[in-house]
Length: 303
Image 1 (cartoon, rainbow, N blue to C red):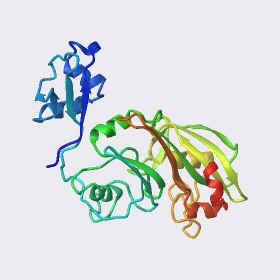
Image 2 (image 1 turned 90 degrees about the horizontal axis):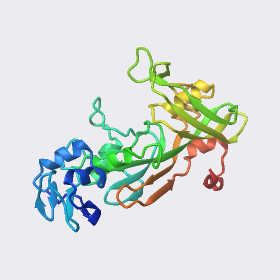
Image 3 (image 1 turned 60 degrees about the vertical axis):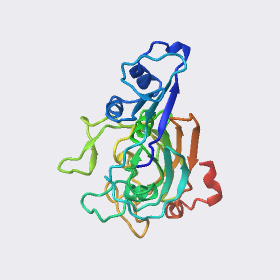
């Protein structure tokens, strides 16, 4: 097995006498579950190159090294699928997802290729990738995968603050008002294990929207989810009276118009959990959505 990715923290004079556990939690932002796993590994936690207990005390200049990589587990089956890679380093992989492919490996159809299967193959066949957020099968655009559970947890803590997404959606009709905030709680629809509904006992959900362009049939919207509920954008727009074009679940399917809900993950912004780098990416709106609104390619940059 190849060496796992590690992080090293050098103790400062202000750390004199601190317990290793304190540094793991506060400086290296390790979760309790991760620390528990590290304690069982021979090289999980090293102080100046030697295995140590989390109760050990550090002195200035000590080097505390922890493994942040995942041990290969074979959980995801590697499958070949062409990926459009927009960013990659030791910790992160950001893709431009096409519409029509699911993100998560299927239990109902183990032979179906998903992004998890494709990313597993891309990363060498043994590492189980961690999608940081989910996109519906029909949604296109930017999606991030963490290459370890540690990075996934660090990014999860950024959700809806430093880690932010905006979407483009094409809604049926002329949306009015042209911009606004939708705050409606979302829960499971009665009798369904898949469909969602607006419910007073549901989880809070908050969406901001803004009109970018419109014609006599459709409105192009910028959609910003301030929470991350399943089907949030689709359901909120439908509840407002302007379902997304092609949304077979919350609107009306018309495959001659567009073969999927007209939703695209347009921008992704995050702070790299290790380097602190500010990452901002944009993915052009696909042609099937552009046709609905007659939106010119050269104008895409302004949205």
